Image (cartoon, helix red, strand yellow):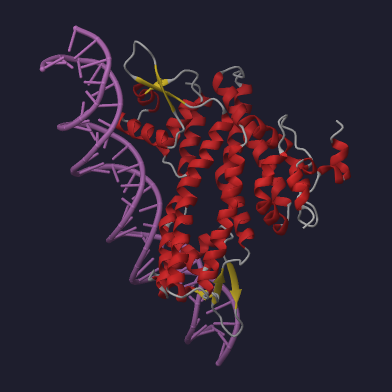
Length: 191
Length: 191
DNA sequence: CTTCGGTTTCAGAAATTCCTGAAATTCAAA
DNA sequence: TTTGAATTTCAGGAATTTCTGAAACCGAAG
């Protein structure tokens, strides 16, 4: 393994903790990400120096996150693993899974609490108002997300590159307007 | 404190671990979020039953995240704390701070590794190609983010509500096009 | 059915993170 | 400058999370 590869893997390990996964899992993912060919669990152990069971756990977690793909190589009983090559698909999965873990449970809880507070006749407290407000915000954000999630990868990539033009879509009145009205963008359309 | 409030606080405590902050910090934030009036550290201790020093640490971390506001009440030497009332501002801060902690260090590292690999004459390995690809994706995503960050809160809220119309802006060819050219969207404009 | 290459589970050791009380510090008021 | 109410720091104990080796498990081939 080259120095560059090692450093990349170590960095992902370090960052793992900030991303809500542990160091081992981060390193396993990083290794698979920069590996040309799929690797089997023993290959991973060997390269990273983790115990077999640790790698097994790590791969299981990565599978829960849908971040690795299992590959069967015929004539070989072992399982091999890779990451998807399409980076956009990876981002999509990441966002989806984080939403599932970090947002959805809270949304459920907030709705539950609103029901309870209605039952208890506490609809007019400050706390209840705040909870409702928060629930509404999360709902509109997830609605937007669901919507974006439906756009195919290729188009999303374009949207991303269009990037700086996006903010122009929002007018002074706050309405989403036709781009044709901004001269530069219209010119770009001819390419 | 009502049962609803207690539950809300406990939930935020539980979720804290998934959000990369600890239980105590999550609970302190939740308490401030649903509190009508600002609270001082002792008030927080009392309500949550944490040690004074733990609350001090927690508040410090929340200040690092820019998620709480310090308020001085005159005639009182103690410091009081609240959360911003504008939820959109909170989301903005959250995204910004997470970007700073979770994305920026990686971007820096990737650039560093690309330089190193150029020096080492390893520009043609699979790993190097992947690193470049990843760096480019992160760059375009952060560019989009920087852009969105410039839109004021009110317009952002509108964009959020416009939500479902956003995906229609991306056409079959993957170009960002005038809304007027998609019949349904054009029809909607008349409402 | 038994063997064998491989994977998963699990109890406890190791490492890390969290929380506390005591001590140090800060700063407005006297 | 001293006082004292308040905040912050810090060492180390408590709790949690991570990691390991040993044992259990699984299923295809003999």
